[in-house]
Amino acid sequence: MKRFLAACAASLALLGTPVALNAADTYTQTRHPIVLVHGLLGFDALGPVQYFYGIPSELRRSGAVVHTASVSQSNSTEVRGEQLLRELQGLQARYGYTKFNLIGHSHGGSTSRYVAAVAPGLVASVTTVGTPHKGSKVADAVAGITSFTGTTGAVAALVNGLSSVVAYLSGSGANPQNALASLQSLSTAGAADFNRRFPQGAPTTACGQGAEVVNGVRYYSMGGTSVLTNVLDVSDGFLGAASVFFGFEQNDGLVGQCSSHWGKVLRDDYNWNHMDEVNHVFGLRSWFSSDPVSVYRTQANRLKSLGL
Image (cartoon, rainbow, N blue to C red; front, side):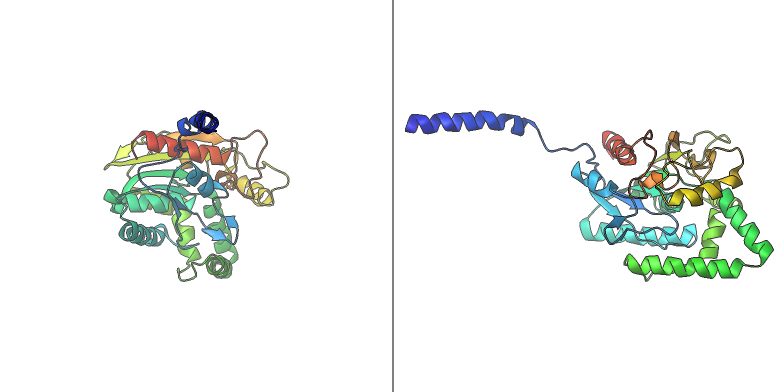
């Protein structure tokens, strides 16, 4: 009996060997936490629906510590940036983090840049996804049309109301909303003014790249150049209509290809529209496009390899 038990123990040990050799998945285990920063009308989560749809859980599955910011759904870059800064300081005080890897979509990208500029010691890296660094022609068009028709106030009130509803449902109802300030920040003129004051990582040519490292912070950017990517995606119709303001310029429905450039450009022509960039709506996208979740995982692994 003793020999039998010994043989069983040895067999179990052998069977367990592959499991022991297969260490826990650490592909996205960055040194510093990842903080995902939403764009205009964005949120952490609305019930089971995440703004970065399915992305936080996949990053965590492979070892990353992930937080999702809750800043104003619509407001100026500076106001949103100050909110994000306070949130990071709160996380630092609570958990003892030293730095953060910020990944911002759309307006979340410039929001992240603000924090990196005013508090570089708190930021290890900034990755912007579909961010209108040079402003959006859609924002310019909305400002022009509403001004011409005298509907600026009415449209602003509508967006503020929608922003407040999203904020309430996502648990961030205390954040102030200011649609006009958001529109100004996202306009060509507003973006130019912001870039003049916070140029860290700015491209050195009209459609080129900028410095990858400034003040100890690494800057990366990526974006898409497709608009109508899935007939079942309800957002495609809106993005398709908005894309007409770009003429023949490549865009994702809201942001021009060159406008998405900042720091080191990882890629600017993914087969994504503006919502595909965060895996919305519910992961619907072109069958032939890159998986956004995999792209975020790859970026996390890049940051890990750099010791960030």
